[in-house]
Structure formats: structure tokens, C-alpha cells
Image (tube, rainbow, N blue to C red; front, side):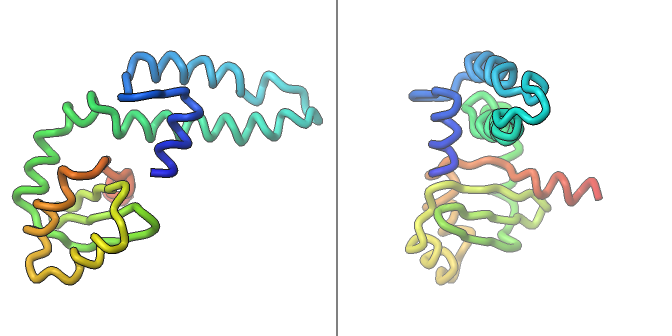
Length: 151
């Protein structure tokens, strides 16, 4: 959730994400923070390089959790959560990463350690996840699975 809020703050997003507005803000931020705008030796150049990368990362992240993106991928996501088992999972902070038996990996944001413990202690993890995690938290398809498939 912290990451989502940080990116929303950079992009000045209040409320729900709108891809058109996000794209417009992204373009203006890239222009503002592009490292080529600054001379070598300028102290702002280093800051611009960091901020430029943050803007790019933030844009891709926010696009991945936007309602329009979810709507486009809903059929695939629904098939995965309804037909596949859980192959592996990792929990760090409030982020839960679940690897499914079809090779897809999804990240869920805001999952508390207590809820994660309930998941791992459940004798029917898939059923527990369907009821308590899959549609209860902000999620996105992880790029990890896509990158591993390309290698």
C-alpha cells in the first residue's frame, strides 16, 4: 500500500485511476525530469535520473493496477484463480505474491501478516484464498512470470 500511495502522490492521483489522466501526467513528468534537460555536473542531473526512473516505474505500476487494465485481463485472472492451484507464495510487508500452477504470478497489496498466517495454516489454501484474498485486495499480474517465460 505504501508503494501505491507513493506513486499516486507523484502522479497527483486522488481517487480512482484514470488511464488518460495518468498518461497525460506521465508525459509532463517525463518532460520535467528528463536527465537530458540538465548539463553534466549540474546537481539536479543526478536527481533527475533518479526521479525519471521513479516516474517510469510508477507509471507502469499504476497502469498495472488501473481498473481498465483489470477489466481487460479479468477473463484470464478469473480462469487462473478458479482453475489453478497455488504453487508457491511469498509475503513481505503487506505484499503477498502467489505463484499459480499455470505459471502466472500475482501480487496482492495490503495483505496483513495475520491473514497470511491464516492462509499458510489453512488445510484448504485455495479455498481460503478464493474467499479471503483474490477479490478482496488490490492485485496485479507480476512481471516476474513474464520475464521468466522469456528466458
